[in-house]
Length: 392
Ligand SMILES: [Zn+2]
Ligand SMILES: [Zn+2]
Image (cartoon, rainbow, N blue to C red; front, side, top):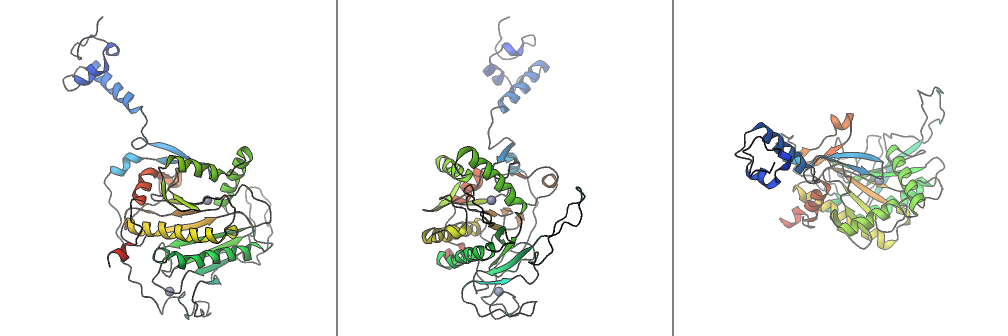
């Protein structure tokens, strides 16, 4: 049988008709065999994979986990939460337990510090003299004493600053303090890992610019995953996983937000949080302690530029959890470890609409809507001058 033009002949097998003819006749055709064919043709069109349209999984080689990306969902209506976004902090707050000269809950009084200030956490999650026994030997009830030291680091005496409002020259002493603390805590026999982090604007976090340093005797969960992945990759390729990844990102240039001579800030291919970024050392070194003068200055510059862009995104103080991942401090060699930092910010559409890891994400796998490439483009296109400076 010869194919007919269009699909007006119900007896014509759909498979023998030219595809274009079926498309032309779409609006005219009501015959059931034709409808079936059109539906199957639409499905065939769907088969051309488009990462900006089609749900897909992406693999995180640092953790060995998959995440779900649903780019089409970014178009759906959303009833978000509304919060307070104005930043009206004074330069000094007499009620703040982190401001210079103020008394903390422990009764200790902060000195009149001028730069950074570090003290042992008054309510630490870990303590140095915990017994290390395993009091229950049942394999389904494993329990271990865990020793550690938790400290607080004030980034600056001024209550009204943030990393985004500090200059690179003001951020540099923070980096030096992180390195000093890594060296000091990591030198202890009972400390195998030093986790530097900042929880900005979330939960009951004090608004004074500060972060925390928790150190303990065993690798924490996220670090352990990255340790395994980086070790296996190095064994197979004789290069750090993140050096190879960075080279490929530099070649593709789809997700890089900011780069200087020593650091690259990008939205990782496998990002979970809407505007998550990875701050990567160009040189594959394992510890913040190893950074030379120029690399420390460049890290201050990179942190300044990404935090300014974050604030500019919704013209409001941006929430995030930030942390540095570096090699363990148990005295072993770690040629496979590649120093980097993560920003995990929850904000999605505005200063008041945040993503929460709930439902499917708690029970199945993390999921995001806008793609990593779209997020990188939005961050890259923002000004590197803080919005509160440009509007003055
Ligand atoms: Zn303060
Ligand atoms: Zn990491």
